[in-house]
Amino acid sequence: MSRRERQRQILACLESLPELSLVEACERFDASSATIRRDFVQLAEQGQVARTWGGIRLASRGALDLSPPAFMERLGAQTQEKRAVAQAASQILKDGDVVMIDGGTTTFQLAEFIAHKRIRVITNSLMFAHAIDRLRASKLGAEICLTGGLLEPQSGVVVGPLAEESIRRYRANWAFLSAAGVDGDTVTNYNEAVLGSEHLMIQQSEKVALLVDSAKIGRRAMCELCRVEELDYFFTVDDRIHSPALDRIAASGVEVVRVKRPSED
Image (cartoon, rainbow, N blue to C red):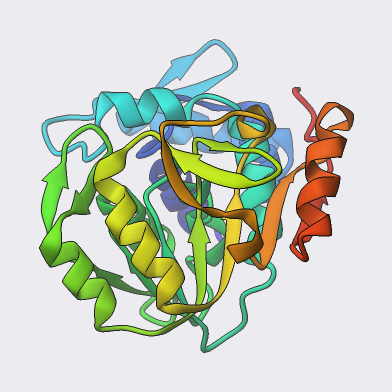
C-alpha cells in the first residue's frame, strides 16, 4: 500500500472512530510503528489530525459529520471484538455476491474488510455507505445501494415504508445483521423502528449471518428479531462463559463461528 493510500485510509477510519491509536493503526494497515508514526506526523503537520496520548483524532469533524453521538458511543464499546467478528464474517463473501447489511455497530466494522471486494451491498445505514465510499480505492470496489426512507437520527439508519419497499425490490445472497441480544432461542433488538427492514433482509436473502460481540450473548432486548434457527451463521467471540448458549445455538443447526478474543493492547 502506498503512503498516500494508507494516509487516506487512516483519515477514513477516523470518520467513524473518536481516536486511532498507534497500536491499532499498525495492526489495521500491517505497517511498522515507525511507518505509522511518520504518517501521524505528516497528517498532523497538514492540519488534518490532532495528536492524542498514543494516537490521533480528526482535527475537526465539522458540520458534515454523519455520525450521530449515540451511534458513536455504541461504536466505541467492545471495538476490538466487533472488528475481529466482522473480519471473520467478511471472509465468507466472494466476488459477485449481493449482501444486505443493517446499521449496527458490529456490522459497521465490515466496511474496512469488504470495501475492496467486488460485491454489491444493500444497506439502510448512511454511516456504513459513507464508510465504504471512503475506504474503497476505486470504482472496482464494493457497489453501494442505499435504501430510501425516513432518517432515524439516533442511529443514522433510514426506516419506514420507503426503506422496506426498497428492500423488497432486491434479492441477496446474504443478510449480515447485528443485534442487541441473543440467547439460546431468540435474537432481539431495542430499536423497533428498524425491525421491519431487518425482517425483510432475512426474507429476501438466501442465507443469514448474525454478528455480535460477547456482551450481547445471554441478553434479551425488547423486540424479537428472529428465532436462532432462522440463522445460517453466527459470528461471535469465543468465550467460555457463554459456551453453553453457543452450544445450544449450534444444536439448532446454525454454523457458530467462534472468533479468537483479540488482544486488549
